[in-house]
Image (cartoon, rainbow, N blue to C red; front, top):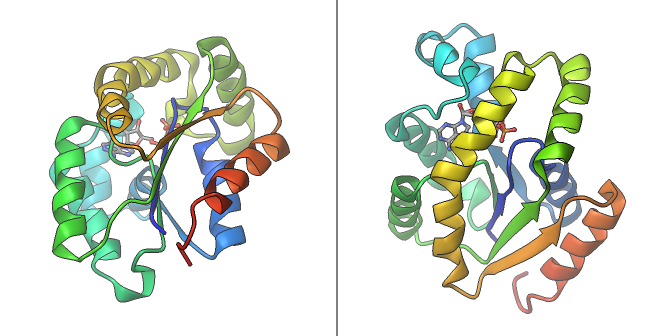
Length: 192
Ligand code: ADP
């Protein structure tokens, strides 16, 4: 099954995606992680995108689309992807639909992790000390939240119109959220 997971920065998308990937033998496709890897490896692409990422804006659709096509086109991951951090805008929704059609795949479940801005600020300041992400300063985190509200909330409205979207309370503990998400996945029949 292919899953899309949404939530504002600091909602716990990455943590939950890793858990689901392991439990259901899926592959976590985190655009944020892929982009950070480019920066860390000092690639040409990395040098192009580092200032954009560190200012809390979105990198261009083309760049992200090319990155994810590598995975959607690979038979190893066919119908086994968790889209973590993609699509983030309506233009990216259209790109994703085109790519899925091209490679004969579909989305089976869309999860939205909801958390308040207060919780986000708290989590991001904790993460900053642990992971040292350059985009985790309070100022940039608020900017990323704003980008999320402006660009990504409309995407959620789009998926609301399908029956695929399920809401998950992201304010509880990691393990409670694990259980809630597992129940949702298990309730989808015939996906194996
Ligand atoms: P978070 O959701 O916590 O902000 P991510 O790791 O998902 O963290 O993303 C970090 C940054 O990477 C974003 O702020 C953005 O600059 C860039 N990025 C990630 N995914 C996308 C995407 N789909 N489109 C454009 N930019 C993206």
